[in-house]
Amino acid sequence: MARKCVVTGKGTIAGNNVSHSHLKTRRTWKINLIKKRIFLEDENRWVTVRISTRALRTLRKKGIKAAIKDNGGSLQALAPKKHVGIQKQATKA
Image 1 (cartoon, one colour):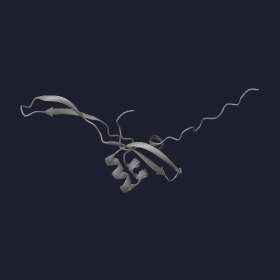
Image 2: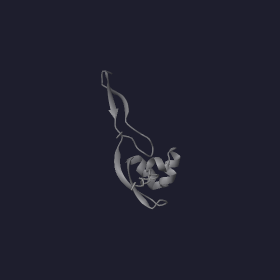
Image 3: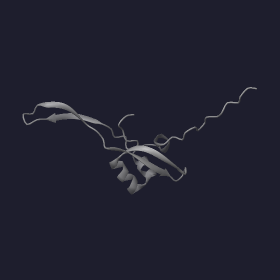
Image 4: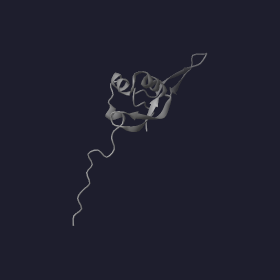
């Protein structure tokens, strides 16, 4: 599973450590992700998402739909319904 926020799309970024003598070595900055259960009122269900703490603050301020819409995402991509469109096959007698 990638270290990526499902709401904002932010992920790990790379750059340089710069020493006092200006030697540059590669390094990465990892995003601060947490697992959070969010309740979707429209679908009357809980979903567990890996979300950045910055995006969590935005969700609390704006609400889930507005936060996802502002970042160009979709609710289905955030929390796909399980077993939708899967039908049991009829057993042959």
